Amino acid sequence: MSLPSTASTLPSPKPRKPFYRQLYIQVLVAVVIGVILGYLSPAYAVKMKPLGDAFIALIKMVIGPIIFCTVVTGIAGMRDMRKVGRVGGKALLYFEMISTIALFFGLVAGHVFHPGTGFNVDPTTLKSGEIGNLVAQGHNIESIEFLLAIIPNTFISAFAKGDVLSILLISVLFGCALAATGDRGKPVYDVIEAGAQVFFKIVHYITAVSSIGAFGAMAFTIGKYGVVSLVPLMELIGSFYVVCVLFVVVVLGIVARIAGFSILRFCAYIRDELLIVLGTSSSEVVLAPLMRKMEELGCPKETVGLVVPTGYSFNLDGTNIYLTMAILFIAQALNIDLTIEQQITVAIVGMLTSKGASGVAGAALVMLASTLSVVPVVPVAGMVLILGIHRFLGTGLAMTNLVGNGVAAIVVCAWEKELDREKMKAVLAAA
Image (cartoon, rainbow, N blue to C red; front, side, top):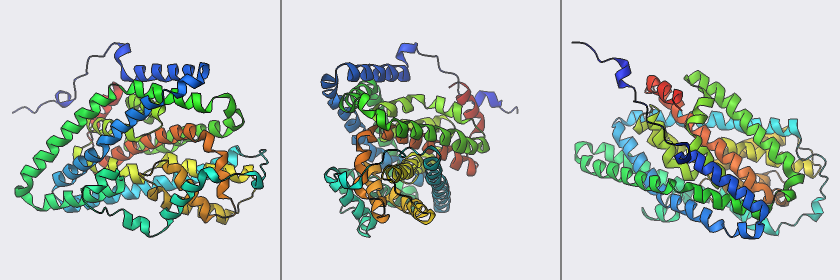
């Protein structure tokens, strides 16, 4: 009996859509139009904010159910609880390694670029009224109450609040319990798996109009903050984006090469998602499309369902770069010299608070407030210096987080020897 050829198992190339129907083209055009409108008519552009807010709200509406369905089916589909623990352990180990590198990458970059040098800001002139709420949230993250808060009051309350860590907790527990029931749990598994397909279809519908959301969000951002007013802070914005690109190309590029793929080809493969994040400044809006693309790339559904949602809470490469660079920027702007010990403390605290800020609105700012409160030599009020440009920095960190989580899924699958390398090679070559 002849064996089927390997080529027959590879995905057949899809016919290319006309360029104007390509999602990334539509989003890119929408972003450009948003920038132009924000520059020419700021007052009118600010009124476009509801378009971006509505799109993000629609996506966030289904994030909880998607995480629950994918994590539960991922764990229950593995059946072997030892494999669940092994995959989860490898994922967390990888997350901590790369996140730590990102933190120190940001520290080194802050010393190389010196974005805050020359500002010579007088600390007594800073007004901290705008950041009082962030500071309060930051203090809450440091306390033991944060750990207890991960446990929701009820099964449903986690979804009602949209708390990612709480949803992950109940999803893992539910998945483990479903796997332990064996064949008796098969009907429940089938219902949840079917539910996942329904929610993914909803995301598909919402994503189809992502260009409208990207236009509204970008028009508001440019109209609200302007471009001219950002000139004094362009050095920080520019250096931050350079560092993010270097991190992706160098650090994640080396990781990708070891795993057997090109980071540039991978970025081209997820260009639709990257451009949606560019317009909306949120990586959450492409959680479901990213998971689907990882499966199409040759990663097992079960592993993707466990690694990617977890990575959204524990693998925040771009956010960690932002954290360390922002602290050094504030210190340099206030002419404060941080000792090596204080900088290491910043990195260690950042590793902890980056998990605590997950699922919180304006998570990066909350994390920054929390970390500054631990390094009192840099006043928390210094955050006011970057509030105006946080939206622009947030776009870069969200895009970096997205690439990092996609790479993480491939690495863990390769580590488990479950990655379909022939399929990945064919898909990336066609990207």
